[in-house]
Image (cartoon, rainbow, N blue to C red):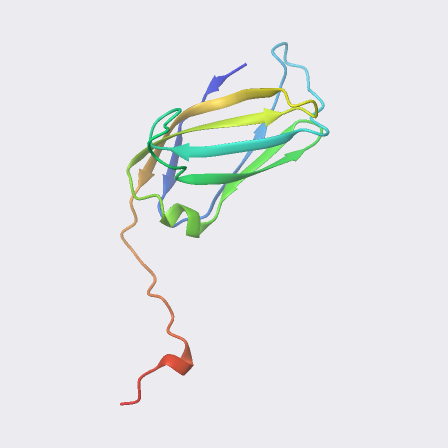
Length: 124
């Protein structure tokens, strides 16, 4: 069953969450052999724009899914709003979307300057 889930992230921060999957009757499913996929886009089923972020999704049997983004990935999220969903894929290829919603991005203020390699430093 699809559950609306909205996210709030801060640009440039690492982000992770654990999703507990339950059957409609509240029982625990066995997700052994399942995979998970999740993307951020500017709009749902958006063919005009590319994927803004591909979340790492790891299924942890029996019924957990770990999802995450690196700081480098969230740095590239330059729009204040995206759409997202999380799908699980059964060993037989059946796709089920379990979460979907909006993503609000708080744009970063502080930036860590890139470190210049020592061999590139200018001689004064």
